[in-house]
Length: 46
Image 1 (tube, helix red, strand yellow):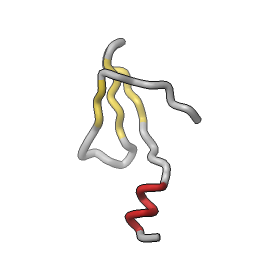
Image 2 (image 1 turned 60 degrees about the horizontal axis):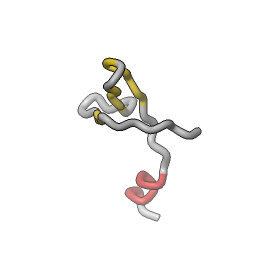
Image 3 (image 1 turned 180 degrees about the vertical axis):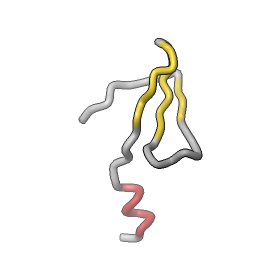
Image 4 (image 1 turned 90 degrees about the horizontal axis):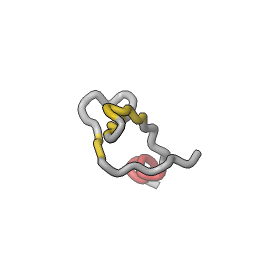
C-alpha cells in the first residue's frame, strides 16, 4: 500500500460546530486552512 492509500483508508477526525439551529460547520483538527459546511447533516455512528 502507498502512503496515499493509507491516508484514504484511515478514519478522518472531524468536529461539528453549530453556528445556528439550522447550520453546522465541520472542521478537521489541525487544519486551519479549510472547513466544510453543509445544510444537510446525518447522525454520526461510532
